[in-house]
Amino acid sequence: MNERKRAKDNLLAQAGILAAAGIISRIIGLLYRSPLTAVIGETGFGYYHAAYGFYTIVLLISSYSIPSAVSKLIAPKLAAREYRNAHRLFYCAMGYVLVVGLIASLFLFFSAEWFVEKAAVPVLRTFAPTIFIYGILGVLRGYFQAHRTMVQTSVSQIFEQIANAIVSVGGAWLLIQWGMGTRVFDSFSDETRHAVFGAMGSALGTGMGVFAGLLFMVGTYLLNRKLIHRRIERDGHENVDSVGGMLRTITLVVTPFIMSTAIYNLNGTVLNYLYTKLVPNLRGLDSDEQYTKYGIYGIAMTVFNIPIAFATAMASAMIPSVAQATASGDHELAKEKIAFSVKMTMIISIPSAVGLFVLAKPIIYVLFPRSDEVVSLAAKILMVLAISVVFYALSTLSNSILQGLGRVNVPVVNAGIALIVQTILSAILLLFTNIDLYGLAITNTVYAAIMCVLNHMALRRAIGYVQEWKTSFILPTIASLIMGAVARGAYELLFLWLRSPRLAVIPAVPFAALIYFALLLMLKTLTEDELLALPKGRLLLRIAKKCKLT
Image (cartoon, rainbow, N blue to C red; front, side, top):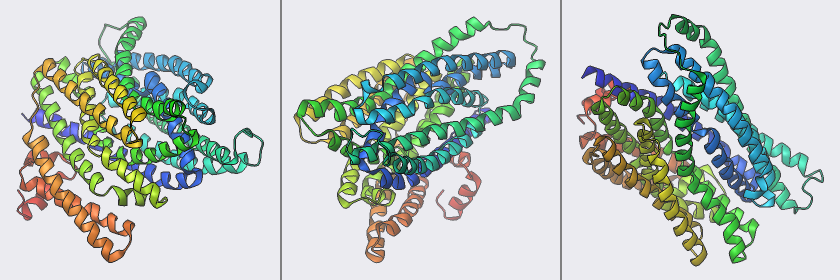
């Protein structure tokens, strides 16, 4: 039992480290998005967001799933102390991404005009080299994640986002200053040229951020190189896997990971294409105006993605953990880890969804202080998206659980079904109704909800997993609704006193979080063992007992 508790504690600790880094990275991202949007404007942000969507899908197909796939492959080798084979897998994976990443980068560069409108082509081409760099970074991250430590990945993410922030804003400003004084892109209007140069600068920031993360991971590997080679020299296993066999294994494992992740994230790219390219052509709408409105949708999506950080971190931590439990045949331990990760993810995601709904407008205003019209529209879209937080968090986690169980093809099929439904629904809403951006938000929610249902059915078939509802969903929902009412009330009172959305919302959020935590304990949602597993768990338990909440 102690072994199982240690496994849970380690799982949450590693997920917590990665989640903390993810949240810090997203906060940094939010802090620079406001000055960036001020520099490049809504239209520039629209070009950036549209190009980023297609860059992301090519990245997903080529490199994005590499860390998860590499950690899944190497973790069982490390568990069996086959250090030589683990390191050979690392080298083979590096060779794989060098080839695939180069092909993907060249493809994106030379085919950019197929995906986006003419004005966004230079932006998409600026993204292209980043794909090659990311593949190398992904292998290094996956190698250290296989050792069941997320520290290296977490720190590299923070370095990546800091560099991204600095270069994005600085690069956008410099490119605009330089570009507007030249005849480059002189076929565009001055307003469009300003937006294009700004979006290119921001895209350059993404690449420099990935490069900064790569430099950190390379340095980390070099620092650990002696230890790695010492373990290889002591490896007494006579069986050495062939390079050809390893490459086949990598291909067979990576391909379903890639397909699952790509199709799962393709929904955003499909919505991007429908809204910025297909709908304007079919309905005779102004393309620049569509990109401007899509930039406002991008603002809402930027805020929406913040709470997904914990689910993504938990998912990354789950893959090697569940893979090892499955490899040893301990399905009960695997089910315990799944139940624990679902519960912790929902305890974070449900109040996040409620918080985004009740405080949508002040949050948008604080992070993106644009005109009242822009803030109001982005806030309304965020309110429609809020429920998606729960569905996306759960579907992201369940995708990785299925991959860790070896059911790597199942998420591909489920994502494909959800994508077909979403595409049909979004085409109907965008072409035959006037709900505009709200149609994107609605279909986003439908897509994630379908994924949740299909993945849960697959988990039940795979290992007989049955979802626990009371402490994972019902009680956190009750606590979240009360918290939401308190958060809104606190904000309104503070706003009446301070007359500033920024000054009112900043203290309202932590106050609501404290209320939510107290409610969780009062409703017996968290056990003492689970509380101890949280960061600073002993301190939290001591405070809870002094306040007579447990």
